[in-house]
Amino acid sequence: MINSSVIEININEKALENEIIKQINNKIEEFDKNKLFYSLDDLVRITTFSKGHIMNTFFNDYRFKKIRKRVGRKWVFPLKETNDFLKIWISEQPNS
Image (cartoon, rainbow, N blue to C red):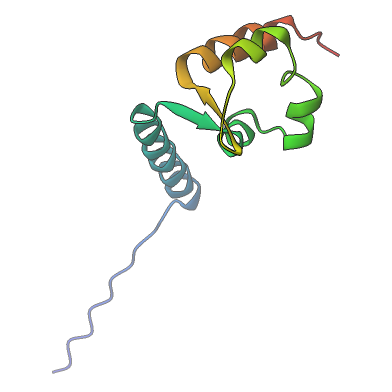
């Protein structure tokens, strides 16, 4: 007698994708908790703006100039102060 068992697995691909994205975001947040500074690349990631757009919009804002620091050839931005500034800055932008 031949035993031919069939196992069928159904995967909700959208739910799986959402769970993967959730886990990635959790890891990013966990990683950010251990950081003291953002880099310019971090600002690109968290704002979804290009470097050029950042430079043309808020980089030279007098309030942001007080926050940003140049260390050698690299710009660094303290996390809390940067997050606070970005929340204020975005609330000031006109809805168009």
